[in-house]
Image (cartoon, rainbow, N blue to C red; front, side, top):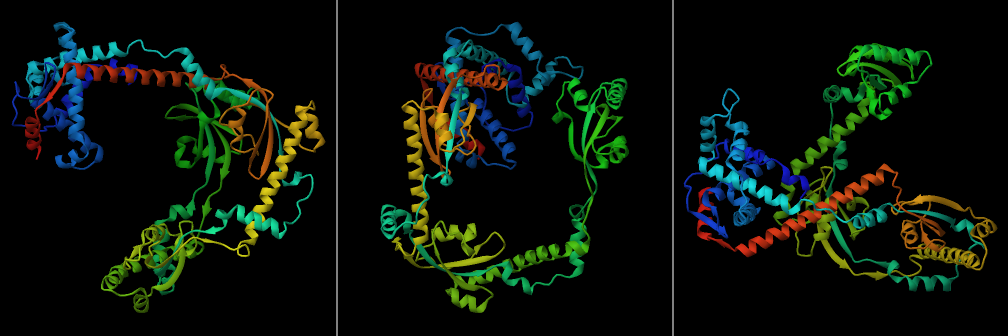
Length: 617
């Protein structure tokens, strides 16, 4: 709950109520008075209040969804419970305000009423007839409305008192900013397979057998489903689809803007307050006394603020001829625009693109054929599905239709062929031996039906089946192991008095330095996890990080606090402070609201609530 939220005018809240009420919601059957659905302390929640709020929220939900909504559906969304809890919270605040004697005077009440636009007559002044008419439309008497207005204002004052003056301690925000914006200076060397002290020799059979056994899960085929399927895709019937030239030309004409684009210019526009200023700037640019960039800066703008992107003649008005006649880099103008006199600079020329019908014909033919093939398949889908429903097998349907039989050993990582369709993968995942084939629609307009033949249990693949993968894995791991050992040697030598710089030079490694690195930054060529390691280190510490097929040895050179001169840090600090203060205010308010509800006591009349609900059905 933002601190400013309690300061919003009560008048506008009530005005919104009136606007909703003037829509003629038509709740009837309840009279004002003693009848209530419940109470908090001595504060009643009336039948009219509950019904009116339900109606308002129901209409608001309809406006949000863009379609009529019956009350039963709204109840499924929990609308009635949300409204009831809101009214309970409001009643609790009203009860507390009454207990402590918090209210507003008649003069303040009168001013608020006179400020509500819906209560004004043709002259623009407060009009009692307009006041009475507006209240009649929402089923409220003047006394009820004025009492509600007093209570709403008192609640606002009470809410504001709860959260006003709340501020998080500076050290809390400082800690958050330090975590997010602290910087590190680092130096590192990167070792990959080209930096091995000795070339890697080919692994022996014993090496591969050991690696295979040590990494057995990597060489175990997953559980798979052997699936037979019947497929009919647009590609399979393309040869039977005929596209006449008339249809092709109609498609070309319909998409002419796509195939034929006029010349466009990459343009910047700098607007001035008057013709004199624009003319003076143009003269200074022509005389070489200033540049277009300087003129932009003099107006307090950046180049991004004046960039129009690529524009056509129709976008430029009176400046069109000059802009489209200018050379790249040339400044023209001033010309009058909707924003005032402006100079234009041309940054590039995008030549017109003309694609003739003959050039576009192959693309159009393929697209139209694919579309017609998909529509043909859709026209056949219902009949094919009826064959399956009648007990026909995949093979029988394939014999009677254009569908073709295929099979695949499928698991979730399978993505080739028919298994590349998302709809096929979804159907395959859910497929059981008890399912009979039925049509599944594919995203290209094709259809497929599936049958589970059997489930293939996970299987350890023999070394000879995966020898290449095992060899590649051994070489990768062995390279990583040796590079790590080399990095450990360098780190040990540095620990015994050698410098990092001399050790890197002796090993023929490039020592890279990076300054002011943030926690979420990644130095080029380093593993993602390296900066997390760096931010856990002390100045002068060294660490080894592995990833991206390399080993990185990094040293933390310096720990730098947030750069308070950086506008981004200032913005971060303000954002964190506001968020923390808002969260604390909300927590305090929630705790206060809960406390006063419990101390006041809540009673509800379910029969009265049900009576209100019945009026909506």
